[in-house]
Amino acid sequence: MNRTEIKEKVITIIARKFDIDITDILEKSNLIADLQSDSLDMIDFVMTIEHVFSVSISDEDIEKWATVGNIIDYLEAILNE
Image (cartoon, rainbow, N blue to C red; front, side, top):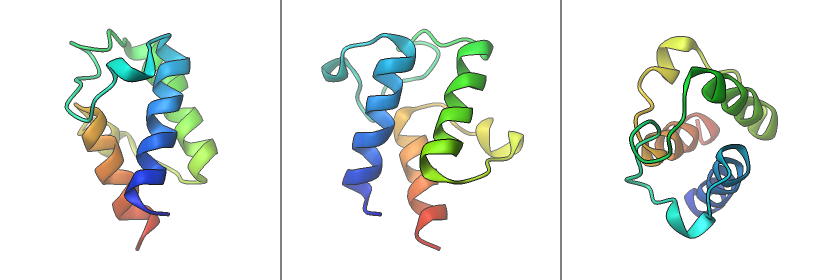
């Protein structure tokens, strides 16, 4: 899966989960500051990401996710190993 496909899926999931317009979500968007996510939102979001991309994500890796771009980078790396 290429970066563009991953980005489109991730942004679509974020828009649905956090009820945000797709055009307001950028790679530099911070999950907490810009997208107003909290820990419960993140649990549901991570479960959805794991399901959609058929991956298992450790808590340590999730802690490194500050921006949308971090998530896309992470998924791109593990999906293209």
